Image 1 (cartoon, helix red, strand yellow):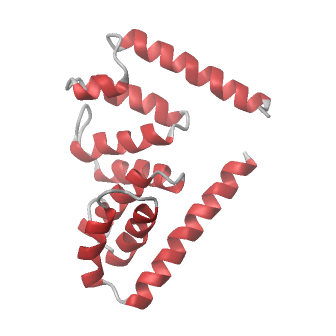
Image 2 (cartoon, rainbow, N blue to C red; image 1 turned 180 degrees about the vertical axis):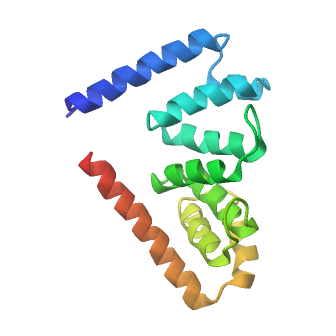
Length: 165
């Protein structure tokens, strides 16, 4: 059942999409990205991410990570990856795990990298398991279990908060 808030969100998102298509040469954000129109795809993904689109939040993180259509900013990339990862986007979980693994925009943390990569692999992300192999060389079994539980707790808490909205 849709609440008035859900309906308002749907209407707002639809209006944003129509506006974005009108301003973006008629290209979807995916098409703009694939055609190298990164400034356009960045603006479109940003508008979608700000309305709660978790896939768009991950793509916005990619734009910040690579500096496509915006200056490179690892902190912003991590913030958007986290939003998407907490909503159980496996790509964002993998991306966040890699950021922790490499220490990009945050302190390098092999254990936290493991936690996010583990949950991405659980959701059958195609490359997360490859990264886990690298990370496990730096994490004790006890620490890996703690981080899996910590990340799982973060995901569950975010789900509860979404359910209450």
